[in-house]
Image (cartoon, rainbow, N blue to C red; front, top):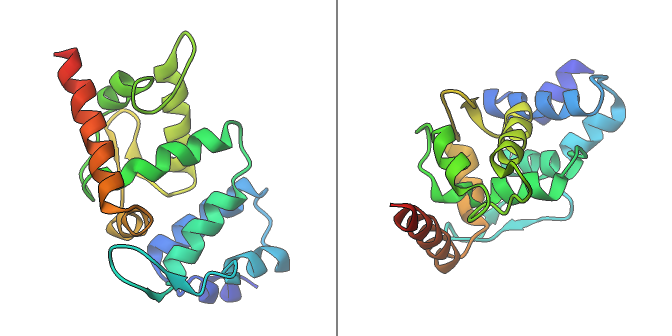
Amino acid sequence: IAYRAADACGRLPLVLAVAGGMLAEAGGQLTEEFIGLLQEDHGEVLREGDFGDEHVKIEDRLITASLRAYDGAERDEVVGLFNPFAIFPEDVPVPRALFDHLADSVFGATGKRPHLKVRSWLTALLRLSLLQGSIADGVFQHDIVRGYLRSRHAPAGLRGKQRQVVGALADAA
């Protein structure tokens, strides 16, 4: 069954890491149901976005399945933090201080300590292997993840989010 899981992931290291994160969230038991989840495409035959229409890649299917399968606390907020990661470059650590500073104004965290909420959301994405790095040293995304995220945003939407981040930083200066 483990070989079938690896085959379902195309034997790609990043995809295997994301699948491992999903498996850990699902209780750690490798089952036929989990293999089925890895093989599902959720009816998405085409991927649309800046890169044109292409057949959905296994990486895209797995990232989508990982997000759908995540059922931790504040699921919507975790997904909401993940989606705008398309504005950040690939393989470049984004420091914790940026997330702390923009926790409420850009990332929508509320309450007495919004920066701690955003850190918990980042931790969830790290556990799912959708982000790499650490809270202490900065988080970053693999180019495959960035490509996935960019394909799901219109260019104007990305520019708007970038302007929001820059504006919030300028307001603080």
